[in-house]
Length: 352
Image (tube, rainbow, N blue to C red; front, side, top):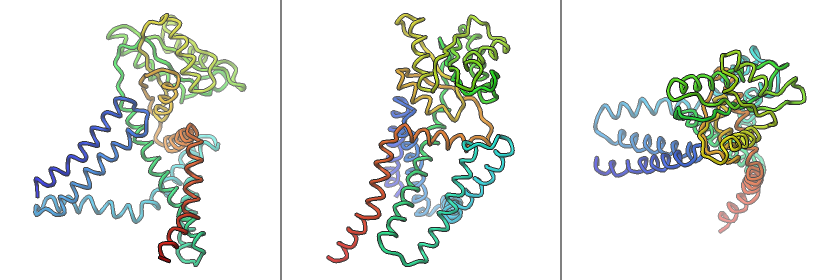
């Protein structure tokens, strides 16, 4: 039986190979997180099956120890998750201003709670077949997008594992909203992360240029890049090591206009660069970097844990918006199949 299971272990090895290749080619694709998930799930599935069928006491004990939390989370995981979302909302509203972007966890928690209540009602109520299957389609879509969100988070974590070499010519620091010309803590962490890399590289092979990227919003006194420059100068960065890009109004424009500046300075010669942003923004920023023609890695500034759930949800929604047309088509087709075509197919099979 041992040789038989050794053969089965080639499945997670194959998934790992595909993950490794996908990671090397483009780590901003969700296929990277999906392949890693397939690697871990297939390995655990084969290992637990092996442990269950084995006569070795230690392996059977591992099977029980792993299985119990899985059963517990299957039964109560949604309630634990809802409680966590409510707790996180309470934490963020204590520390941040009351804004829509800060209550995404609350909206999700209320939505999930209503879903649990509605599902119990549907189970206990006699409804037309089409209506029931419509709700089943909605459940299926919710499950799909939660699994999709999980792949997004895994891929985001993998982006944060990137460790660029300290031989860069430029570090693009992505701007964000500023308050009366003052750099807020969120943006300050981005600049500090870039300065840390700058300082470490300076000791190795000379400093890179910090390319501060961000235009002037309608409600801002100066451009984000100018505010970042003042912050960087106060941190001891020489002015000759600072470059400004002051036209951009989005992450894509940050990348496009920064590339134009670097291309002009280098006159068509090759150069190496990375970008600095908050850790939750790394994946989507990498997507926009590629759209702008930059195949570069990023370094992520740490974010307070209480802030992360809302920030990641906001990033995920923005990621879905990038593929908005596909998501609309997928959503409509899923509902139509579940509420109309599936009942017709089932009734046809029953009548045969």
